[in-house]
Amino acid sequence: MFSVAPAWLWLFFVATVLVALIVDFVVLKKQGAHAVGVPEALKWSLVWVALSLAFNALLWWALATHPDPSVAAAADTRAFEFLTGYLIEKSLAVDNIFVFLMIFTYFAVPPAYQKRVLMIGIIGAIVLRTGMILIGSWLISQFHAVLYVFGAFLLLTGVKMWWAAGREQTLDDNPVLKLLRRVMPVSQSFDGERFWTVERGVRIATPLLMVVVLVGITDVIFAVDSIPAIFAITDDPFIVLTSNVFAILGLRAMFFLLAALAAKFHLLSYGLAVILVFIGTKMLLIDVIKIPVLVSLGVVVGILAVTMVWSVRTAPRVSTPVARQPTRT
Image 1 (cartoon, rainbow, N blue to C red):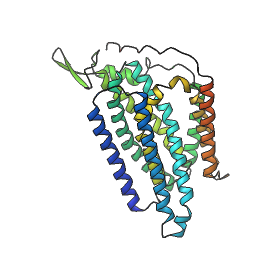
Image 2: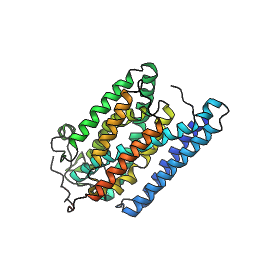
Image 3: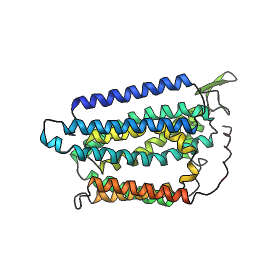
Image 4: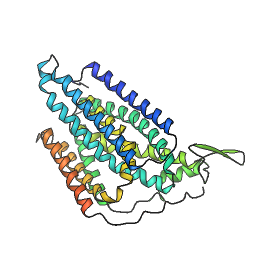
């Protein structure tokens, strides 16, 4: 697993992520449980995007000033790889967010409690994806044919996403939810932000704990889709890891922003499906046709732009759905 990134940049990345999480925790604790409005979500979304772009600029500078001429010559390419990977992860995170929204609605999670659940999900996602990316990088370095497996998987996933787009989804038949309800007693109502409560002298789980478990499992499923997508752009583990983590860091703010605008982007799943098909095809043809990273970036941006504009132009007028009350276990 070779990376062009110098050791100090690895350390700087780790320090940046830790500081960002600490700041997020401090802000979360200071604000307490409260509903996040669109202005606050937009502000934090811009902060995370600006931080990601600043790191991208630092990556370019670190490589452009590297004493090794071959590394310096690749500065532009690596910077564009980071940006492309970041946009792909941000795009695929949108579909992840819609599933989170469905989970929160199903359990009628009060908006004030959603921030904590998402924060825990972000930390779990960073740890999980770091391990998966390192394992994936090692597999690719040892077995080139793994790229074809990833490509075929992404292609099939894109087709499946296109077929499922626009169809109503529900958690009623979710096997994980059924299993959780069988193995643990769950209270009918929330107890603040607590995961456990006491009813009739017995310690039982609250619906919020089930939400956290479902959010974690959802992220595992989406990680299996999204991580191979970045390997179609670059095989550098540093680029794959950093673009992925920076996309995740802004997930909480993006959730509250898109939750308010979900109806306007009703066609976005179709665009994401096309992106996955494109990336999967690119990976399958990697030894036949070398698609430049700038072309990949242009395709991803173009598909997103067309899908979002068309979604806004054809957005249906729907009333706000009534949150479903959690059923008694």
